[in-house]
Amino acid sequence: MARSATIFTCSACGAQSPKWHGRCPGCGEWNTLVEERAPAPGAGGGRGGRSGALGPAGAAPAGKAVPLRDVRVERTPRLHTGIGELDRVLGGGLVPGSLVLLGGSPGIGKSTLTNMALGHLAAAGRRTLYVSGEESAAQIRLRAERLGAHALEVPVLAETDLDAVLATMRAEGPEACVIDSVQTLHSAALDSAPGTVGQVREVATRIAEVAKRSGTAVLLVGHVTKEGSLAGPRVLEHLVDCVLQFEGERERTYRTLRALKNRFGSTNDVGVFEMAANGLAEVLDASARFVGEATKAPGSVVLAAMEGSRPLLVEVQALVSPSEVVPPRRVCTGLDRNRLALVLAVLGRHAGVGVGAADVFVNVVGGVRIDEPGADVAVALAVASAARGVATSPAPLACFGEIGLTGELRSVAHPERRSAEAEKFGLRQVLSPATAPTLRAAVRAALGDRDRPVRAA
Ligand code: TYD
Ligand code: MG
Image (cartoon, rainbow, N blue to C red; front, side, top):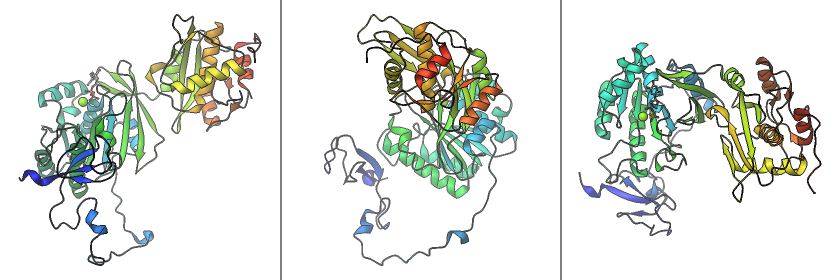
């Protein structure tokens, strides 16, 4: 194959160059040139259609637009992976011919989850294929042995060459196929190393072509680093039908699976899993576990959170201790740091609980990540309880609500479902914007009347 078959395109301005440059000759941005396959000569502009804008008008025949109501849709049934939480997050199972990107940090359990899903499909009589560019067939077998008899039925191909993988996909014609991972496959058409933006895009595009033609549902596994900055999966988000994110702390047992994009379902659902000795187990009673484990000690509060459309009770813990460093530490796990800073400021200014120069640690227990404003009040009450050394009454106390900058509690989505979830697990009293209009009132209700004067205003 002629080596000149690739070009370098700037991802910022679109300028093209036959050679790689550290700095784009077009716009001057650094590190934006990405290797791509050059469009075949005479291919009508090829990808990006750059020549189309300048080409003679009327060269192509006009397409026929059809009213949506007359568009024919073939409703193919979805493939059920046999993992309830995964099917739910997907919106009811895998859609034939679709591309799903499953992102997550290394060691989180992506290979385990996909292997289990294929195992169930194989046991249900579906044709499956597991392509691994990371592990040898023997390593995959060792893992599959832990996952049970189903997982051992999955045909596996340990291969990193894209053309070989595509040929196998065409030959085997799987209904469901896993590519583990998209960053390890390599297309010989490009010179760049596996895992670079150009390669990852090329691999995904070519796999998508084969998948759409043969109706194969493809699960692309992609590694994301802690910062989420790895070149790989991010560039695929627009290309795939569904982006799933597998999150959690590797050292903890709980992991959450959520959809960031889903063309065939909502992005509201979250699946909770637990890593066990024989693979990932679905956690259906997550609220019950987190409430059962709540310590009820000073600094512990139960947050009635919404994980998408599903209510979830989680314990929020705080520790306030004298600091030896300047500025004092503000550490949080499972929460946004800026949100913590805001809550501490409002707590000091409007609720009479100043933490001043003390270190503050806040943790959402169980490795769960909470990304909603409804968590504010739980953080505030956990810190207030820790700062005063007084447990909430009743303990554990369930709460939710957003904190405004003027010290008021603001309502958040789905208050009835949050309260219902708390009640279901025996937490009768729920502190919310409906029961406490301000943060000061909330602190008083949770910690008793030992209100201290507001610090000098
Ligand atoms: P893995 O699925 O290989 O992670 P990823 O593909 O996302 O990198 O496995 C993650 C970890 O889970 C690994 O360190 C071993 C552990 N594990 C278990 O605890 N139990 C099991 O049954 C399996 C298969 C793995
Ligand atoms: Mg893996």
